[in-house]
Length: 173
Length: 257
Image 1: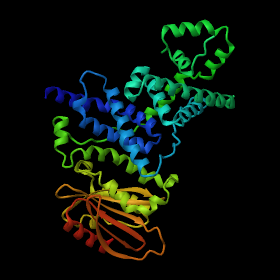
Image 2: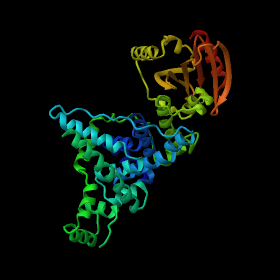
Image 3: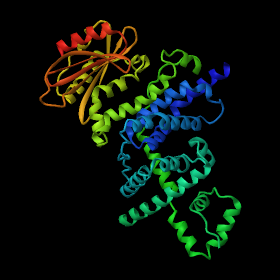
Image 4: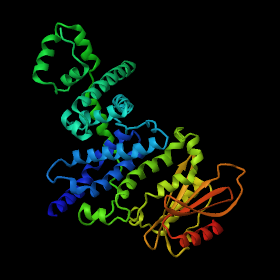
């Protein structure tokens, strides 16, 4: 009982500082701000509900991302597909401008747009490994997939991104 | 001469390859232009990607208010009247909100959706509301009036706060604009005295020739509902299981709105 209380407390305290990253992860999953907002909120409530399954002292972010991933795959996305509506298209996701360097702005927006435009499985794996900095093993654990699948996804994502971003760089001169 | 897979080359570039593989690729790299080219084809700047996503953090919304859970996860689950369904409901809420707000405009809603009607979507959305969804909302009358002004503008018809506060058993909470098939859909949310979320949703009639219609009653997603049509708008009042409350409120709203 004490352990469960501590777990709930850890989750409750850990959520606010993690929230921006959680939201960003939700954005990678959903590719849409509106849905990311809703998914992040649902994930927070779900995390509190499931807090007894969190092992105090372990990585809350990984646990939270895994739980969010399940929530998205098992329920939210499935609901949309089941209802025959398919998935919503990728939204144009904008970045705040860095006034000092318009060229860098443009490129950063392009990078973001290309990553967000990847298929969902690749996009979320790129987010975990290249943005969140997780190892292949950690990403595989969060996504609950074999490590080989992480590698395949990243290889495919790299190929697409390398080609598209190179084209964009050439265009920018 | 070994043919490396894209996965192996990716692991090499990411510093995740086993030492033997690293050694092998390093050895062959200089002598094999094809390998050089393949690595170039997989080459991306991870820092650029991380940097772009880092800037995204500045645009993250604030942490939402969450229900005050007391005790452990078990206690939370036990406190729910609908048990395990609650978890699914919270999760599905996100999808419904997004689909209501965005789905139609995206062009993904096909005839199946139209046949289902807007009421079924609203009902699915409302089924996900629980007491905690609205109970923390406390707005001043001035804020409520301002909020109503915003949704009135979106829908193209006025709302009177006093009318929304008229039914004693319903505590008016908030107004928000959603969307269905490109049409604004206003949701006015209430809490019943017994803690059931109730919503009055209004949308402009899809067909210009739609005639006014008396209040009809039905059960949607296990909730009491009333719907009617008047002055070019369709209305759906839905929530809880108190038939008398829905009847009283629908009769009143159909008369004043």
